[in-house]
Image (tube, rainbow, N blue to C red):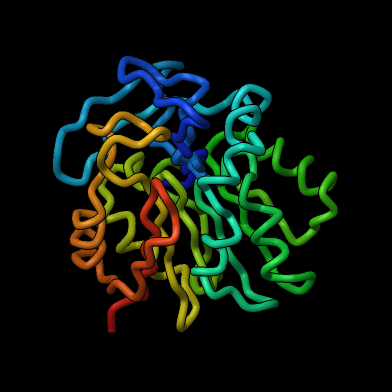
Length: 249
């Protein structure tokens, strides 16, 4: 499974990234924001091949650079992290994984939701980002945040380890998604849910080029094939859809 720096948030804080190569305005879908697939060279973009292949792939291994984008205070206005976390219905004491956590933009919000007795697994495939999030958790005073190094095809979650999983702007960076999310089901405790946040189609001021986005309907269809069922589809964000899935019985 892909984890990642993925989750690679590919989102532009106020400007759309150029289709030829990623720019500082691109947000990693890696919670990738963050997650990405594979360790492509800087600036490399993978063409869309259809099916359940990733539409783009590149590295997010420069924390100082990407923190300026992912943690830009202006992002809060359209990312609305409190609204996203609210859709996840997190209870104190739960274990939540952010796959593709990147620089840890969502970590403080998730830490507040799980409380002192809960755990936030901040997974990414970039060692430099894991180190960055470790230092950030210490600085923020959130010991419940546990950064973890994952792999492009595996977030390294143990069986029945988590109650909630979040992927922000990462879905389109994952290869062989039906297999990935089919295997991911084993990491959930009973009643667990998976939340996918990614960019809507159309002319929007942030996010990757439209041909790198995956329509909401395709996300739902792929996850249904992987053994999930849509539990919630609330239009709470201006530029992204928020889909909550439960394991199909």
